[in-house]
Amino acid sequence: MENFNAPIGVFDSGVGGLTVAREIIRQLPQESVVYFGDTARVPYGSKSKDTIIRYSRQICRFLLTKKVKAIVIACNTASAFALDTVEKELDIPVIGVVKPGAKTAIETTKNKRIGIIGTEGTIKSELYTKFIQGIDPEIEVIGKACPLFCPLVEEGMLHDPVTDEIASRYLKDLKKENIDSLILGCTHYPLLRSTVGKIMGPDVNLVNPAYETAVSLGKLLQEQGICAEKNHESTYRFYVSDAEEKFKAFANSIMPFEADSIEQINIEEY
Amino acid sequence: MENFNAPIGVFDSGVGGLTVAREIIRQLPQESVVYFGDTARVPYGSKSKDTIIRYSRQICRFLLTKKVKAIVIACNTASAFALDTVEKELDIPVIGVVKPGAKTAIETTKNKRIGIIGTEGTIKSELYTKFIQGIDPEIEVIGKACPLFCPLVEEGMLHDPVTDEIASRYLKDLKKENIDSLILGCTHYPLLRSTVGKIMGPDVNLVNPAYETAVSLGKLLQEQGICAEKNHESTYRFYVSDAEEKFKAFANSIMPFEADSIEQINIEEY
Image 1 (cartoon, helix red, strand yellow):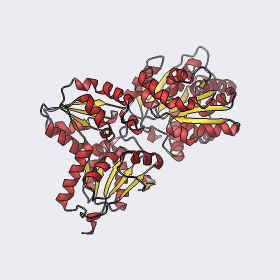
Image 2 (cartoon, chains in turn orange, red; image 1 turned 135 degrees about the vertical axis):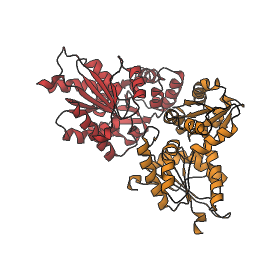
Image 3 (cartoon, rainbow over the protein chains, first blue to last red; image 1 turned 60 degrees about the vertical axis):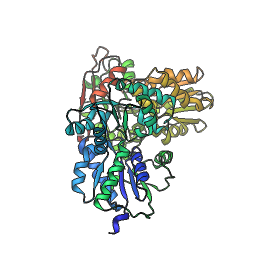
Image 4 (cartoon, rainbow over the protein chains, first blue to last red; image 1 turned 30 degrees about the horizontal axis):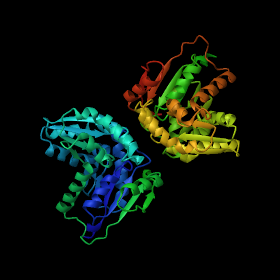
């Protein structure tokens, strides 16, 4: 009974997962959130499956010390590599960002041509492609890596002619592919939504996995009967494994409130 | 006697140190090179000193299996954190990139105002500032982080209006600082030398640590009497801890020859 108001644990390799935390906070304002960003070991995209599982286990152990009632893996690589493993090992529900985004794209595509943009690691691993074609093998998935998008977002250049120019170059070939849905397959990319939308045009539906993940989380909490009480005063706490100042600056630039509770911890102890 | 023709070991956290290997190959064409790029664990800039020392020891152990006669730490962070430790532990000479670059800047500045550009990690750690002011406390060192330079270089955008625009923004404040020397304090930056030079103008001397390190290495080999024989046919071998294809593409774009001997190894075994 008493854990209704327990927080949701959200983790990512760095700052990107804050877009997922932001959606959870928007859609489920009564829920508390404990966020962990593995800023010491970012990026995950170039690391092996075994390493990602080991890191994810450590982080889940840390989040459990904060008495979380559910965990959201707000990182594409960790969702693809570690979700099945940690889901089996934990007594609380765990969801990732890949399935909710991919499912929405599958449901919305009419011509069965889905685009996916992401980091080099995400695109090369074909994690979205495998999941989508596992459900509907007839769907064609066209991927495009956009390596400069993350550093541009982290430099705060969300609305900038340079970013527009880079986006035009990256999306040029994808525009010719006659896709009708495009998955923003990196947690940083929802912050470039308007730039990408302008280039792709109104006929391409942009799928934001951060948004879809928050929707999935809301349904899951309902199903399991573990939603926070309506009048619950939610709290938001942030933990990082390195460089909390840089994290704070980024968090404050995208979150709807001042993120003042940020603490650096040694994740390797968990 | 027989180790005159043994290779030089060169290592970096990724592809950046190739600019140092390139200078060694240019200046010392009779020397063979074994390069290791820690592409699985890049970047080093955000990691702790203990971790960097542990990684550097592993890499030195690996390079020793290739019978290297000297080691060049072609990474700013590892030079600052691990050089003193591994230098003491090894029987062969070891040099880093920080001291040669810093020394040249100290020797060339007339107004005692030196600029330094680098990654966020390098600038924040003030590793060049500490070394320079340890030698001459009167010198003012003005640092500026340029986080987008590495990803732009890795995207091959060396001569591109977007890169020019980003560089203008980064260097705008530094131009007002009346510096007469500017250290290209990241191994990727020599590839942006012409862009940076155009913006800073002819009165600012650009110091390329990759070039100065190769000069220092040449002197060191002379002093120790371990230069390769003049008619020695040198060989170049490359090892990475991850993603050899991406490494190969980058290496071939900047090296004066086709880098065909590239092998992926598990560095954690060393």
